[in-house]
Length: 141
Image 1: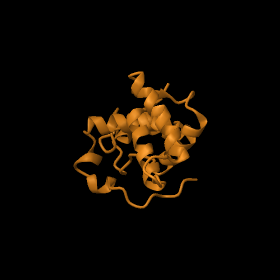
Image 2 (image 1 turned 90 degrees about the horizontal axis):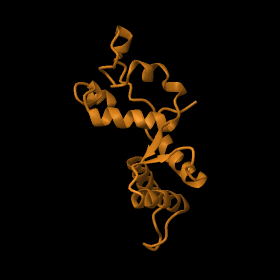
Image 3 (image 1 turned 30 degrees about the vertical axis):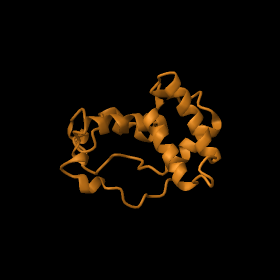
């Protein structure tokens, strides 16, 4: 089961703080507040992941809006899994992750993104970083 990592919640909070800044320096937008409650409980309980299936609806909606603003796939169009590699040299995903990417839930995709980012060995992070640069985001179907 995939969980929503605390760093993704932090990113979503910052996304909403930028989109809907506090008018008085104290109050928070509904989306920011919903995510902040989850974040505070995670910190209090020393947890790094929140269960995606018990995530409060308002916080999940705010998180999903942030998620939709992130790149969908780590692919840089250099796929070595098609050549038989277990892990793609281009994006860092496993053969199964590449094969089932379109069927994965957002939390599963973010878990994969986190792993490949922490490993930092895929060509998207060095040799072909310019291909991975975030440009205009394509429309989702």
